[in-house]
Length: 596
Image (cartoon, rainbow, N blue to C red; front, side, top):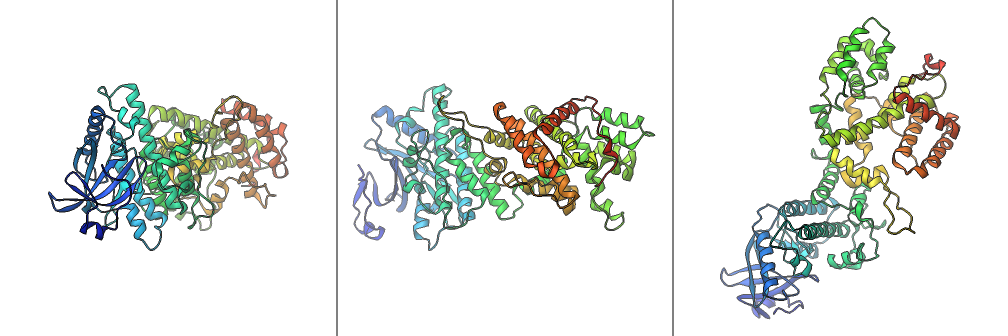
């Protein structure tokens, strides 16, 4: 049986092997945890050094050994570029092992020990992304690693990382997860738990690389996991005084991997991979980042699909050809996809190039109709993908809910705007303040669901405890996509051809800062739209018992700029809901005078 103490340096070990294990000469202990250990071993059969991984505790009996070997051989059969090729799975005197080729590289622990300076965040996250690619492939095949450590990750001279020795842990629970009936519910639950443990272990390595220190002063990821919920009371977050500056996006992703609320953690290796890869690619300004993916999709499928019933809207427009442009605009505004497409067409470089130099951006559907005519409207409608576009049935349902909230904010902004401002302009400004959210909901539908889940309050552990608040929207987007909604909104805004002046309008006022007095018309419009969006978010995402106080808070926040009282906002919200439902609510008489 191998000893657990480190052997002498490699050179001395080659001259005087200190331990034999079957046919192998154990030359150096390269890494160990409570579950596994990795030896540099010489194999006389091939006259080469190999990497030998074995459990710290031998299987209890022959049946347990058979289960260990079956699980390890299952993992050894998997073929993926980010999984280390297994040379042999065997046992010696009841001690099982997994053998890999030393030529595949050194362990990450060796790499760090031999480096003159720590890896950059981008370099370290690149390593973990490669490991997650192999891990996700293994998890899809029903194989977990069970003990992800620095010594279970190999890196070669080209920086290629491989995950080594799947299922080599001698953990009793892991062994018990292999059944004769693989679809047994207990086996599936154990398999899922082991996969989620792997993901937390990768998160702990990310904490170590990004934070520049051992998580909880412990190198063994398994021991750290034992101290975190649900096993222990410890809390873990990146320090604010890390050796290297940490971007907010990366901080959100890494902290989510070990969040004290289990529902907020990553439960799928591909989800964590997508978030880390999104941050890495955005950081490198690569073509693979979420911003670049979004831009490609905007060109391929457009910003939004046509709403259900677009055909009837176009028919009604044809009958209204001789009618007032205002009435046409009202019909078009029922379809946000068509409305935004018209703004894109009239604000595009091609159209603007035909206008007089210095013309302001178009922010009303009325003016868009006047510029391109009814035939242009028909062409814009034809260019849209029919509902639901690229969305699944579930995604389409979620998209409709989001669109209703955005339109409700638009109607509320109309009612909250100061006297004399164009209601159509403020409606569209409120809509454009949601373009990042709409882009995620349509083009990253699965990620959108994760973001909303992270934003929801977490139920208390017991009846006496208070619910834990959810993450803010930007923090949740960081944790899922590796970027924020503002960055995605900027991509859409450039696609729509919006000017810097309009971009200013589309940025909501920060909720954590006081609302200052408006410096001009643009600031007033921005404030009205921001207030409306804050109110709608409050009633959409907060529990009923907190909505009233939140609406009152918004009214007071904007009282100096918009002259609002809590009663004004509550009444306006009720009218906006009626407008959304199609009730005939007359707009104030001062609508005819427009300042923007």
